[in-house]
Each structure stands twice: as C-alpha cells, then as structure tokens.
Amino acid sequence: MQNKEEIIRKINLTLEQIRPYLQADGGDVILSEVTDDLTVRVRLTGACHGCPFSMQTLRAGVEQALRHSVPEIKEVQSVQ
Image (tube, rainbow, N blue to C red; front, side, top):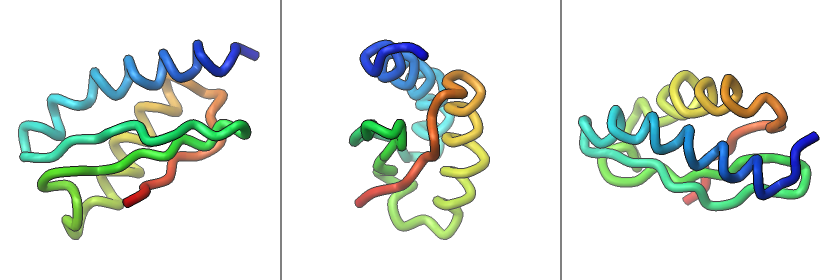
C-alpha cells in the first residue's frame, strides 16, 4: 500500500481534474480530511452546497473519479 502522503497527493490531483466541471456550474470541492482508515472527507462549496443534486454529484462525480484514481480509499463523505 502507498503511504498516506502519496494517497493525498493523488486525491488532490484527481480533485484538480474534476474541479473545472463543478466550477462551470458555480460550485467547487475542497479536500477536508483523509482519515487513517482512508475515508476521504470533502466539502462541496458554492452552488454545490445545498443543491438538491449535491449527493448525486458527490457519488456519481467526485467519488467515482476518486475511486478510479485512488482505489485504496475506503469511502467518500461530504462534510459541512
């Protein structure tokens, strides 16, 4: 398994790749934390915060991209 710093680097690179799609709709995503058990916590901001489709964006967009790039992660959670 890769060390946590390398995993965080890959997560940040992936978020940079999907960020333009969120920003095109007035939103954004920020990495809040990666826990020791590799749960990724992100915060949706801008238009994504409070949007009725934010959970769909999180699961179908953010989580899918992260799991593809960083299969070691356990899950992706949204935090406020």
